[in-house]
Image (cartoon, rainbow, N blue to C red):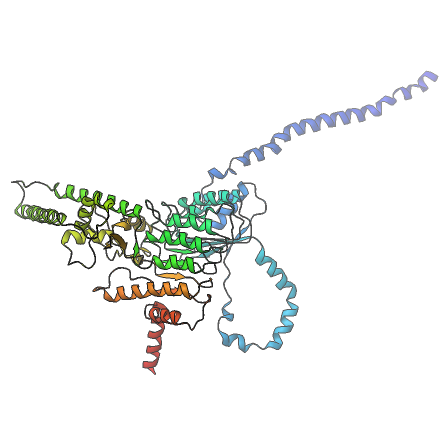
Length: 561
């Protein structure tokens, strides 16, 4: 009985046994369940990795959607939003509507909305990508990024989504913390964008190496470039001047350049002036709010009137004239022969072409026998044959007689004026005015830019053994507001403006560029009542298109009343 009584405690292991079995069974069952559920929990991330690859995403052309999707695929959790650029409220535009509101009601309204207004201010400074849309199809026309750092990865995302914006015209970066490395990345993505992208503004982005000139490379398609507030000094101006033009290269697409609010002095202004010597595409230049004094002003004014070519420029001009003359003689001797099977009109046409080309070659030979003017130095005697070719080509002085047919073709090709579209017989090159080029489609502008002739082939004057070019008459607007120019620099600009005014009045036909239309020299180190400044204003007033429009409006109002 005692053994039977002690039997129940023996069975005590049964109590923990079910627990152990249950626990062990639960562990095994949980393990089995975990083993079965692990693939389901691990597989979704593995499956999601493939669609999150940015390379496989096809952009839709909607920047808001594409940018957000690409940022998500690149692992960004908090990225800037794409928003429409805010515009002034229409109620604040007319003055009458604002004056009608009583000021008494505005005070309690501003007090009750103080928290909302404070929150809205923080929203304004939150990093965003502001876009301006086309009114018709709501496509992105301009992009504005202000006040937040654009990193390398953001530029990588832009390189994916910006090419799909077919109507993108401008990119504006203001204080985005660009570096020389990120600028190189930004320049690399510009060719990927649409051909309509012609304007780039990088303001408030000082760079240690001042590599802004890379935006003005020979193959660049940028037409409007703004580089204000970038601490550009004389070294940076030297790089920009060399990008405008050198003896063997020239930027042919840039139309406007804004270098205001920088640290450019006399030396830097001289580099910019050197770039304007052989540049025939820049129409608008601003050097306002810099440190330019009289020495730099003299250099800038020098290129606006006839200036003397340097020895290296004269040598390069002779080489170009020799090359051009040999090419034209080859074309004149490579006309198709007369054949008996040709029609009567074709035979007559070929015969006329032969006669005219033969006459032009004979005239060239007759003119090359003449001794060119202004050859008094021994070093120029070795280039006498070149000078003869120069007189028979586009090197004629503007004061000589009416040019021949071939010379008109030559001068039409070599002129800066580029007045109208002319097709030369051999190369089929077009010459278009600068004003027209600025509004041409991108395809035509790029094609025209590659066919422009070197400005060294312009008509020149020979005086006292020196060669003088007529000066840059393509630049239409020059802004030198708030520099350090005195009356000495004013006199140089007065001489240049007088020359350009006299030249434009003496032209028989209003073809080609006529020089400056606007010259801003206010807020410098001279009195506004000084005679030179007053004379400049009087000469520029009838040339300024803005003042002309105002006079027309005033005359129309006066006639209507």
